[in-house]
Image (tube, rainbow over all chains, first blue to last red):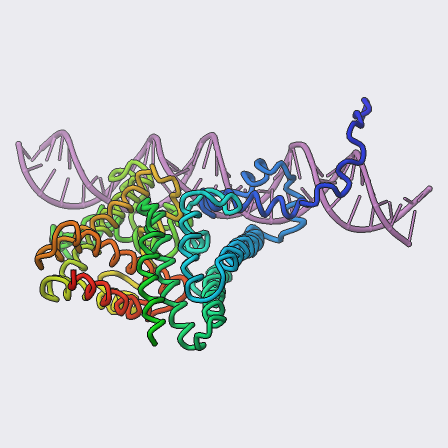
Length: 210
Length: 210
DNA sequence: TCCAGAGTAGACCGATTTGTCTACTCAAGG
DNA sequence: CCTTGAGTAGACAAATCGGTCTACTCTGGA
């Protein structure tokens, strides 16, 4: 008011910071939710951590749950994009599907920066806090899992596998995937992905014969 | 004070209700925690639901977390006792280990009253809310999983399998178990136990050859 | 008979929760 | 120039949180 606030850095942040406040909120909220749980993290902690004003949060999101849904969408796309690229790198078909477990191994052992330090599967964790299966949050998590299964199924079909068989194999691979995640997180069994991979190899081999 | 409170039912509840207040609190807390999550359930809800006074709760437990630890112990023993009896019923050895998945199938589809309506694995759910792996709650959950794996391993050793091989097979079976639980809970895939069983059969069969 | 332990009901505490609101700044576009 | 939208800082509200405490009742055993 009385003193002129110094105007260093004039236009530097015009649109240079593409990451707008909304995205900052989502990514800060994700980190905190993922590490500490949803109900354990209050709005004010997200605000203090991100340095964003409360009014701004409620300008972008109607409620905390609204923010959570945006966070789920964000994590969903980050995770699926990462996994899809890992599978694409590995080539095509049933052998590539084993790359899933190499990717998991990297994730569990914190070799994937974009996924943040491993703290289990965010979607499983969310379901633990939103038990009602009809709740939007729970449904979003179920959809995420289904989408990944579909991703695998498509990969297998590209290798000439029938829709039905590809679906069946993908379901088995996903079951192993979830098992590995839980073993890694709950039991601290960081080698779980390797174990799952050895089981997966037999499944894929078995599907070859048919 | 002024009017004599009527004394119907004189001694009937002397020790007839073996389930003392402490146990009532634990079992009420478990039901609420399991359905709604730990942080989502307040002390007062547990009190109102059980009809027990706040003073009584803090007479038995120092803190909410103390109560939670007692709840974990309670669920741990209920679940392990149930599973052990199911496995014992099924006979001995590697074929009996497949009974694990029949038991899971009954659990997922709410055919086991003592386990309460299926809402995932309470221990996985707890870890989702207590991410710090050094936290007593998280460690209790890890121990529960390890104990069940040991249970399976012993069963397999009774069938003449070596300690090392039994451990390896048990680890694989547990990975399938966790995968099935997640698929059933998050994705609502209630047939997941049957799928896991079909995979388990190949593991056990493979172990026969060795 | 009296005392101790377990119980009840509920007021109370300070901290924290989600969410609203006022008063203000700043930058871009018509 | 002037409006508008996005932003800030932070007071505020109502509810709820975990936990403490007082005053009381009841029961069993010494």
